[in-house]
Length: 489
Image (tube, rainbow, N blue to C red; front, side, top):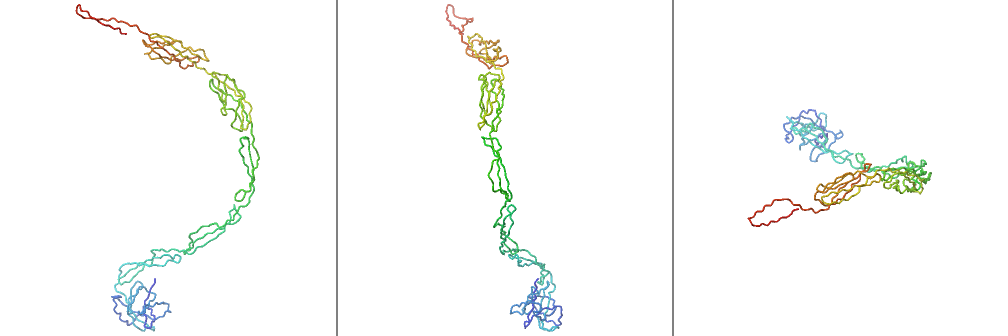
């Protein structure tokens, strides 16, 4: 806390300082200064003359005032006649007009009356603020401080709380930009050489480093070095013309510390490819009569596709053979069954022919259904006629079992079947064309497809017929009557 003591100057300009606690027998009259203090109780003391050499530092006031300020007490003010109000340790004092006197210790002094206000009481608590300087390392901005104190009725301020900081805007400021360099060792993979790096950063007043650019490499002379020699082999796909291998190659190279491969030699063959002759195997295929038989040809080779050739064919009466990819298909002649054979060979894409192999063919017999024959039947109206049904069968005796499949409606006529004979009787007075169908069964139980019997009924003129009727004619006696009649069919 800064305190100020206000001291008057003597006529000769000598400094005077306080010396409290000594009584003065004949104090001067206080004088009346209502602008300073009223209702005061006074005590007395005196000031002895001292020089600046005693450790006090004085500051001279205005030339027209007979006082100067001594750094000790704050908040003091002086009257024009040398009186003053002085605040010390929370109390306000009135210092009356001075008079020249001779203290006991000798030397020139001025005597003062010192008074304190009577019946002083607490009024309220107030606060004050001040601006303080920021610290040296953060000079930009300001610091605001505040403190509280008690205001008393005599105008004095007491019980100061001490200064506390309420706000701070202090910030560091930029000082300079620094550049830093460093050398790094090369990595193990490139051990020969060095790495040079550089970075810049700002130095601020608080000692912090800011806006670091990060390390950047300015030069890098690291290189890999020879480590060892090695070799490798590879397998290649054989060409289509010579598909059997393996086809292997080998080469050498240098291995460097960074794992790179250098000074590779050319590939050299260690094994080559060749073509293998295909081998054709025997094959047996089976099917039913009138159904093609097929099977995959058992050819082994280093190729997968072949050209096939029939060396000896099966008899033409038995059937014909053809190739579909790697499959042989034998189509038997209609209704043929039995066993036969053929021979074949295969050629690979490189032109090599296989051996000749045999394909055995078996066609199992299958019962053929009979074939019912179409028939025609003609008759006159109001008569009936019969037709003999028949069928053929290539592998069975002629069928004797027949069955009606579809017949005309009753309004047209009626069909009856007795063995192999079918009889059609038209409805009375019906004539026109119609048909019915039948099928035949062989001894093995196979039914034929339905066959049609076409029927034609010729119209016939019907003889008119008279029916007895009663006719009564009434007339007068001897008067003739004429009547007409018509025959209705």
